[in-house]
Length: 404
Image (cartoon, rainbow, N blue to C red; front, top):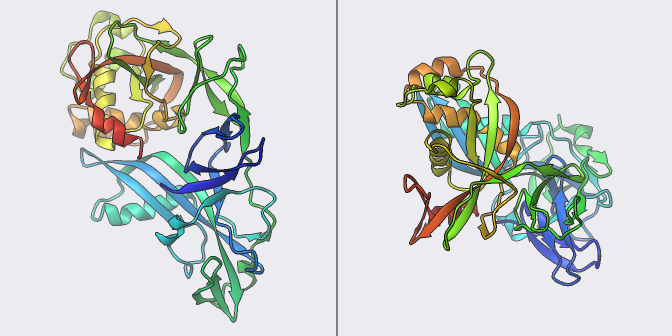
């Protein structure tokens, strides 16, 4: 895990954060802030003070899950890469391991230097990765669920017709003639602004709770949940399935009501489309299709399995507004990422994947309603068991999933 060096905005103390950490708690002045990058985090690696005129090179950094659907098969894997985001191919393709020994810093307007533009989109960069990972597979449908997506600016400088590493002072490569003045970069800081939002409930002013990578904060006073949108907190509809017991752990799921016009609107449509081994009940013809997608991090294969079981094998259940008392597993996956996974969840759930593949191409989901639902699980040995005893999740998978 890469680390970020940051100064507390209130007391100025130096604090070390984990990469993609959203909740900041200063151990000195006790201030608690939610860090919102707006779109994605931007970091830089600081060169020595005597490095001279620095040019910052952007690298895409992605860590998360990749899903592919091709030839009636859903595949998944964990992706952890950094790749050159510029068109200058003479620069290193990756930041490499050595840069992980350095502390990152948040990019702010106060950082001096010149900045090269990001000529390659992240999706294009990841598509190049798949050419190696999925050799021989033609045009697979890909979905990326990102736990950590950021741009990291690496310092270099120009001397003796060569480009030098701004950290080590070692030559990287000769400057090609065609690069010319285009490599000089743009003076000033790159775009993007961080927002540090006080973790006080907008409704009642109570101190809210969460873990370092939580995408949703909870208020124990008014039982509300909140996520960041830009530089403000926005209320997240929140419910829970009531249960009794002494060893309960409540896991968060995004309940997504979605549709595809004329194809998938109701629960009965989903049964027919996916050729599920159940008989569609009459009342399902009027019940909107709802998916239950994990709002927590776990390995990709477990992610799809859990989403399939919870979406199509949960039976009837009642909901109460708010969130339950007791142990809450952190909701670390934002709604936008869960929504992106819907295509792969349906593909994985389909009994007739070849038939589903014919419909799958070009599908566009429309989200109608969504919210967070906390489901009770019973801690039993090394597993978390759903109260109906029909499904369990490995406790170790949840533990290690936090590091994905």
